[in-house]
Length: 87
Image (tube, rainbow, N blue to C red; front, side, top):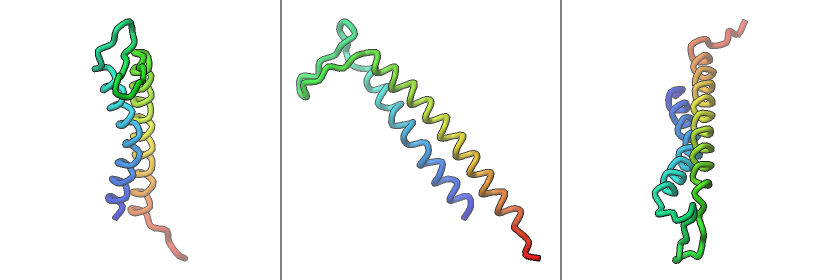
């Protein structure tokens, strides 16, 4: 049960970072002209610098997610290995 909770927590904590990484990488692939890309379908101008920001935030959130998941896994695992005594 502890491992299942830890795996779910790892998945949930990594999703925002991985989503931002995917967004940043998809924006890098756009054909920019003068550091701008105009999406005619939606009428939106994308700036090339925004892709870098999305990628940096994605890496940061992914690292935070890994640290949170490892910390929670250690806490949950410690409780499973060393149950409290009721004296």
